[in-house]
Image (tube, rainbow, N blue to C red; front, top):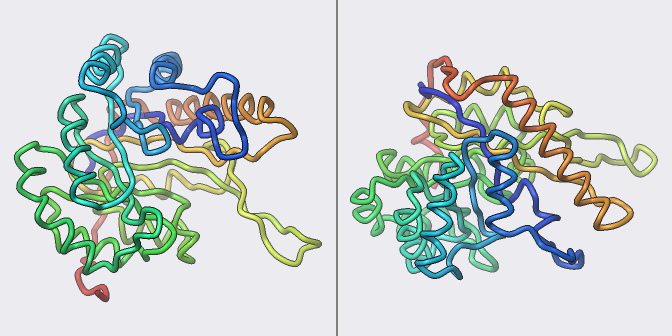
Length: 290
């Protein structure tokens, strides 16, 4: 079972403040600003993902970021997007340098959408390097691949060096709700993206909208979810937000910041950094279609 849960923030907690296409901000949030917010909210972890990439930083800047995080009492986690070997080799170096225990990535990047079998063939040669580094490759569930397909990839590669970055909402794009996703991927999760949501009628009730909410303010049932994350070892619960666009970018950024504060406060009330997560029986997913 997971030994304990630690609360974290992400560059995807603040995508509007960092900057999105068509929504420029006057002073974009940078790596140091993210560290300050993480420490200020009392979170233990900062996951820096592909919307604020680390590979443009040289070794000196990466070491400075690592040292500043340590001074603030924040552990860094490294993320990127894609499964190309050259990309992951570079990010494995970065993860090693800054002391990240995992490297989060998404299988799809741009127009590259490998099948599960192609993803396994691409990633398998990286196993020795990840094993030597003692770093887990955390594959995130996203829009296209079903939970069972992703679980098959992880199990084919080997759970000693590959796990799942479990996002609570992303798989709606694959027509899978949180209960299905957690049931399949919970036993493989090394990292949790806590993303709350609501589903409301729209367009004169002729359809539905999926809307982001601050953690604790939507339909996500943490009490039902957490006991199903049964992989041994520590688990980080990282806040991600789908903050809705407001009348101005400034108003959107302000709402995003309030939601981040509310979300971390909710999670820290829900559990401290050492709360155990109860185990439940699991089932194998190796029979998933290739």
